Image (cartoon, rainbow, N blue to C red; front, side, top):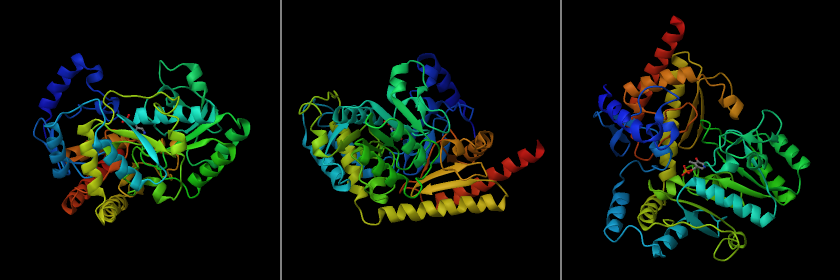
Length: 434
Ligand SMILES: *Cc1c(COP(=O)(O)O)cnc(C)c1O
């Protein structure tokens, strides 16, 4: 396998694009080597500029639940493009996509489309602050809600602490409004609320955490968040940018039967184009401009091309049995990985919720950011490159979710498991040699 063209393209990109990329993890810093420049993708496969092909488990970081270039989605985009790509005026497409979403997410009576998950989370927070007339927020260590200032905050380990900025350029005052507590830790949330009751506008959570590998919520964690926030008068925001239409048709709130006050969606609802949304009860959403005082707008929001892709995607996802099929395929892959791990004597810990997998090189149960970080990133590096050489494209970081799509076939699964076994043997051999 050669990466000659990717290397040249990367060098060219480095001259004009910051770090050669438009989103940091794409740069392969966490695993080393040259990022692959992609020429095309179809179904479960992706091709780089050198002509190598791979089974793709990044799936554009979540959106491509139907696989790449799904025919109905491509046709919808093509048909709409011929009619114009943006008008800056309402279209019936926005209503249609909103109806498809609201049918699946009964907690959302109304919603607003935006262009990225970052915007959705940022706007939901602004709305929560306006509604509660409070300023603090609670987020969880290892959860990602886009790159708005309030969310780029790391907490001290253990007990909740006042946040310190996790990125240059974030003011201390923005960070000070964010409390960060460990995921799955109800006691820590209770403590924050005891110490700061009547000041917290919202708790924001990934109901299944997909940005520290993949960490499922413990039994009753989400229910506890619901009760604590309700009792204090704070809002509960589910950031379902990944989990929406992924872990179930109605997202994690359907899977775990919890009704948040506000929901953020993104990724899948745009069918591979830039779409996200936030929504909730009408009473809350009526605070947003033009009905209310919370300002939020977007030149390309509700973009017709993106709406068309979203509609085509969500219509496919209404098909009967589609989530069962995803579940079966993902279970088979997970089973194969665990078997390969056992047969090679590896210490792999695997989390799975539906078609989301989190793979860790650790002996520990992974339930929060601290345990996620116990993974051996050096081993992941070796694993990643071995998989790549065997035609499997995994996320280029040990802290990202592996996604299965409806386009992955039984043959893909078999090939992947075979590659996993090889990669684990290689890791074994390297650690014995050293
Ligand atoms: C990807 C992601 C975001 C940010 O979405 P962008 O479209 O990348 O801005 C927010 N929240 C979660 C849970 C995500 O996974």
